[in-house]
Length: 230
Image 1: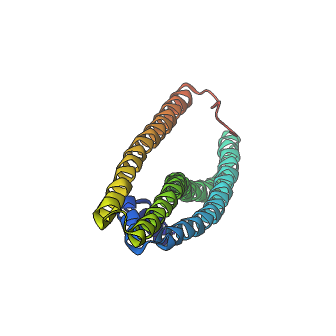
Image 2: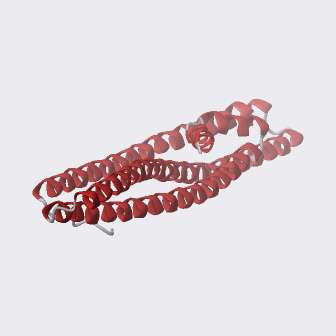
């Protein structure tokens, strides 16, 4: 699981500008297409891992509640046995209660760990999906730029063959400058989009924190959590 998150982290942090420059130098979209394929493969792996971990977390949480229910019943029985003077039964029930309580605590710890891992996978998927959208959009722009460069090169060759204009009139410097201007605009738009994503993620994290604070307050007041089952 850690290795998957590490690979996803590398993909998320990939330098899009460097990737575009490589594509321009090679005059090919192959490097971008390979990156998109890798992202899509890892997205599929993330979804499968998240489903597995999320299912395990639910199983562990259910086990915890089962043992907690058994412990609560034993706790009540211990008091009854003591009130009736049945010390041997109370002792046996206390021993079993200790076991049930220990099992419940262990399942609670395991469930919490799996739930934390599940959230990491969901967060990674969200970031990777955003990166994929950004790269696919940039691919469209890059394809148009490469096609423009090819068209200008063809025009330059045709005019040069006729001899009506010099090589400098439709030179590669103009092509590079035009491509670079479009790259700069696309990069700026990417930074804007990234800012929007960071803001959305911050809002989600703030909402989760508020919900956790309210849940803790309800627990302290002995109120049933309104988020149960959601």
